[in-house]
Image (cartoon, rainbow, N blue to C red; front, side):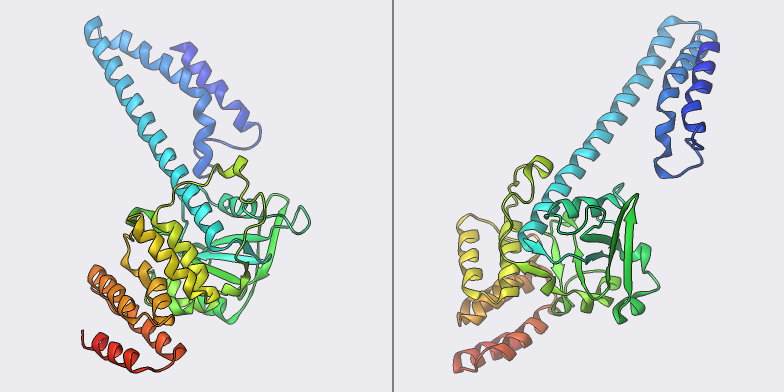
Length: 341
């Protein structure tokens, strides 16, 4: 027991020498207690030896604690495993949706996309693309709206200078040079890179307030630069399933490449891919409408409406379609049918 107490005391010296401790310096400070766990085990075993005379009872207690410890580590490891999977899918979806992004772009989302990541998500996003400025200057920075701008969304929309950074690395940009995103893989959804046309998406209110900031023109190309994302960092491109088609279709929608969207839908259908979030049919509805295949556009609209029971994202889409396409008897007849449903 005395040895355990000495180990615990001495284990704190490394942290104390730099003004840190496991209880008083933030979320990640529990790591300063790792070295002391050996001493805690010695004290615990000494207590069992002193207080529990029956060695069978001691064995049961020790085995029970060991089982709980193993279970905790397995659950913790599984949590990190899922975090890795979700992050990998996020990075590759972003690379598909935005193969190249103009430097100086801020990435805005309602909250932290991944727990326990903090500013390090910004570093990962920067590694997705080539460095185009000085090594100490970052091209992109991620901002959690709830954390940094909860009561400043009006100011953000009006346009303000943004800055960020960590250690010697710095980012500077303007709020109007932003991309607004939403990602909820737990609900089966893909990464959504949004703009003002997507007000009807099921997204938090704080995200809706800043949609006008999302400048899709910051996405400067439909083709990725060779060697990016670097697979030695992000691994091989995973099987993204439906999200592979959704991201490519969303990029094609931005480029008004309607025929590519219909080809993507045909390929996805042949492979049995369909969305878990019916709102993700929107690019395909617009694609078929713009090539004049009104029957398929209406069929996908019905599918999307049946899956959500909502029309607040479909009506703006159809208004945009009517504004962008030529009036024909078939279009007018279909629109009247759609309006009556």
